[in-house]
Amino acid sequence: MAQMNVQVKELLIRDKPSFLGKGVRKVFYGQQLVVTSEAEDWVEVRVSGINGWVHRTALTSKKIILESGAKRAEVTASDDEITIAGKGFNQQIENDFRKKNGSKGFGWVDQAENYTVSSREIAQFLRDGQLAPEGGGS
Image 1 (spheres, rainbow, N blue to C red):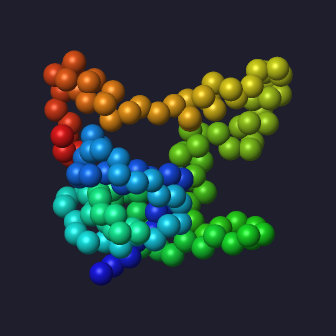
Image 2 (cartoon, rainbow, N blue to C red):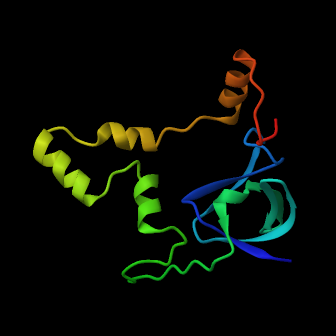
């Protein structure tokens, strides 16, 4: 069976191929998962005896090397992709922001990055809005 690596900071393995599936285990950047099957954009995986589903975009077949003291761990994203994922903030933009805004900080950005929405809240939002999820199952 094929092995894939987690390429996101934190990933919730779910009990069904849907973002609304119940979380059964968390895995983290660089962890290896065994692929047991695939269904459209979802991959069924096994780790430590637990089976579940994750979205394909959270995985890579490339080896991720995490080394203590290394200048930079190998990643599968380009610098541009990392910048975009960081909501457009890079060191130059942060420096310019600090010069222009002085005492203003990045607290709101940090707060937004740490904001999470539970599966229950997502399901309620979909029901309230009479929405049907596309490509993510239900």
